Amino acid sequence: NDGQLGISAATEIPRYFKSLSTFPSAGIDANNNIFLTYSALNELEFSGTQFFNKIYAINSRDGGATWTNPTELTKALPSLECVYGSLARAVTDKYRLIFQLDGEPGGIVQGDLDAPGVNDIIYLDVDTTGGIGIGEYQLGVNGIKSLYPNPASDMAALEAIITEADYYSIEITDVAGTVLKNIELGNVGTGRLSQSIELGDLKPGMYFISLNGGGMKSVKRLVVN
Image 1 (cartoon, rainbow, N blue to C red):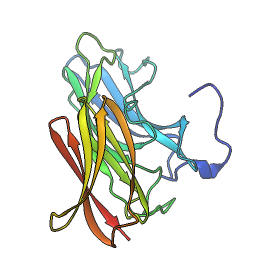
Image 2: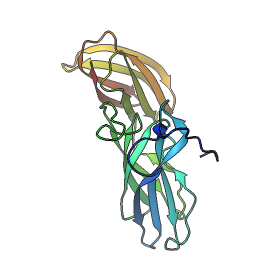
Image 3: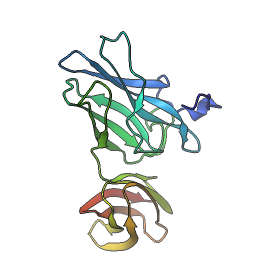
C-alpha cells in the first residue's frame, strides 16, 4: 500500500488459504457497467502479529477491458478485519455490500485457529450517483463494532463507530439486568472510539456491554472466564 513490501514472514499473513487479494464479488447496473469488491491485505494496518484485510472496490464501464484504481471502502474501520464481502448483483444508484467484521485477522476453524470471539456482519452502501466512480459512502452501522477478546479474563477492548457527537457511557450488566459497572466517557466526537474495559472484578459468566449516547444503545454480549 506504500510502494514497499512490508511482509517479513508468512506468519504475518492471515491464513484463509487464499491469495493476498481474495473474496471477490461482482454486480452490474442497467448500463452494463461492472462493479467488483474484494478483500486484500493492507500492509499499513498491523495487529502486532498479522496484517489486516480490508474491502476494496473497482469498476469498469467498457465490459471489463479497463478498470478504475482500487478504492478502500472500509477506511472508517481501521485495525479491524474485513472479509467475506458479498455485493448485491443488481447495482442502481447505490451498490450494497455485506461483510464480516472481526477484531483479529484470520479464523478459528482452520488456518490460524484463533480463539473464538463474537464477529459482526456489517452492511455498507456506496453511492454511485453522478458517475461510474465510487462517490461518498456511509457505513450502515452505528455503535459497538467489536469487543475482543471474547471470551476475556482481565481486560477487553471495545471498538465503536460514533456517528453523532454526544455524551457517552459504557454500562456492564449481568444476565439478570443488574447494572454492575458504569464507565462515563464524557463528550465524544464522531469517528472511531477505542476503549479498554477492566474485567478483573467480575466473576466468570456472561455479561452485556452497552454503549449509550447519541440517541442509541448498542449492546454486545461478553463472556468472562
